[in-house]
Image (cartoon, rainbow, N blue to C red; front, side, top):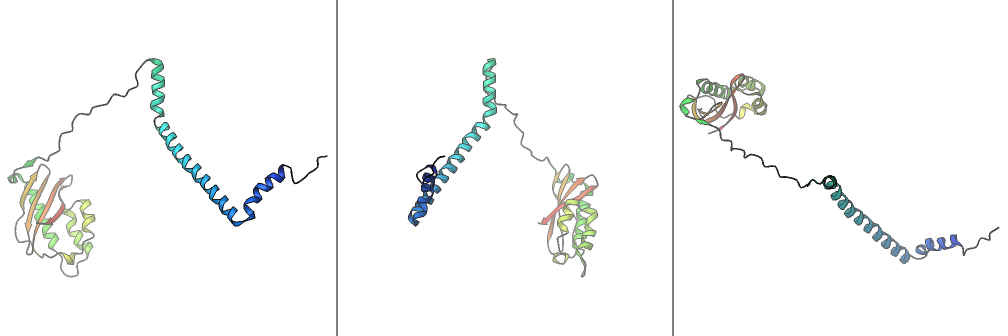
Length: 198
């Protein structure tokens, strides 16, 4: 039967574990050394992961090189040249070519825009604009308070300022300002998609 003593393997382990606990200075040194080791391992693991990530990212092409080398075919990628894309420029038409329906839509929309007697709710005001406005722009107009619209009447006809194949920009004068209105050709006819102050 073996004789157990404090000089055996367990005693050696016990001495190692008890050494830091014998004084606060030893404990502090132990914590600093262990912290440094952990930090070093983590930083090495991070850079090793990045290196391995680089190898993984390039692994597909490296594998291709190995396979193509064995078959005698070069694996150098050939750059693909795309044809140049022509610059998109809208085709402008003479102002005299503005469709009458587009100008009429701009005028009628402006008349509905200035129509906001006292007590008109936002829903009522937007309902008057709805037949002449695109669905996307109606969402913007729904957030407008009609009491903030400064004009109260249209004072002249709509005049085209820019004309394209499927859009017309027109100005409409009111009693306080001039509106710049963009009318676009949709499946449902000419509709206003934007306005601003001229």
